Length: 485
Ligand SMILES: *Cc1c(COP(=O)(O)O)cnc(C)c1O
Image (cartoon, rainbow, N blue to C red; front, side, top):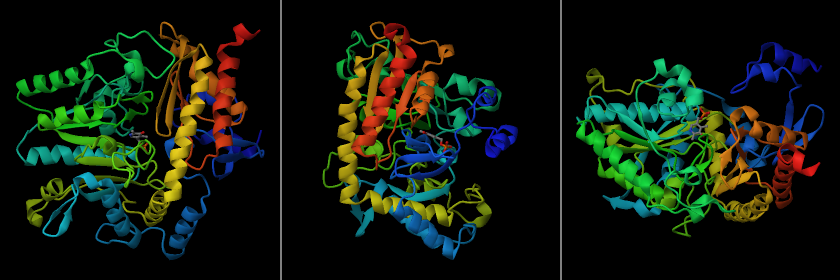
């Protein structure tokens, strides 16, 4: 066995991995990447079909991002932002504020643009960005007298990260049950999972369930009921926590058009803060469709003109190069932490690497690429090709639902598409399909029975084709064996 593989087996404990299974096969050791291609220690090439767990945007080894990082490397890699500031982080805070506030909200006050999301708090990853939003929302609510015991509402199946506060906001039993004793109480409300919604009276068809669903928006009624019930108890929800347009780790659950706008209106109507988790959906991942073609949105919230009070970004912030995250919030929230030193209203929170220069440089380069016409067109074209290409997968009887939002797709594998009967998780249908895909040179990971495809924006049409064809072959080989032989 390869030396690295041996050292790995001896000491490296991998995330979200049953290490007993891990030890049974030789690991793929990635040594380099270029564009959408990853190369392993044996020289084998793979397509990065989930953008290295949803982080990468413009491909690996991108000259623009590489140059930005190495330029910064020649100056300094890291100095603290406790009592100091630095060039790339200061520039980045302004850039983030600019893209997070779409034109539909920009009014002017005293000649200066009045930007709702005006302040940026940097952290390291999606979990910590959500922790910051949670702590700020909690303390803001207490300070403005709305509640002394702020309570939060999030969506069924929600995933907002793995640190303890983020876990408390989540509702995935498999991940979270064991740690219940560590968590504070939050509430959950049904999410608009059209394919498996008990209120959807439509029979399954060979298309995205959102397109043929028959319902009366019971999910929104449930949300309204939840808010009303909490109000009756005299402790209205302080914050509504959601992923806009599509929930990721919940199983790639997309929202039918109009849900986001209406759901957030309900929450606002009850005085709740809006906490948007765009860790996955941010920076163009959720598509190029725009209400205002002159300014294509980079964030999913903007697609339904939703103005959150907190916006958490991470994964794609640095183009998938370095761990860095940010929580954007409003002047109002910021002001509630202002005071004389001895009032101790300071936000006592931070990380050693807050505002790291290398991360901020990568993020600035990422934003430069994103704003070019060429990048926008490429994403637009890729999204269309993706939509067309995915249709071919309907021919598999074991494909129950194909759901796409921008450059994110979830393909739900089922025992029987006519009844939507799911595979038992113990059958590891998703895992087995992805294992065969790896053998065929395409890397991705499933969420239970949902296979994720999330190509980097630089993916060529041939590479995209290959990702979809290999998934199709893997489904045939894994789930249709009996039928073929
Ligand atoms: C990945 C993810 C997180 C957690 O981010 P980490 O960087 O893994 O801590 C939070 N929210 C969403 C929506 C995510 O996809």
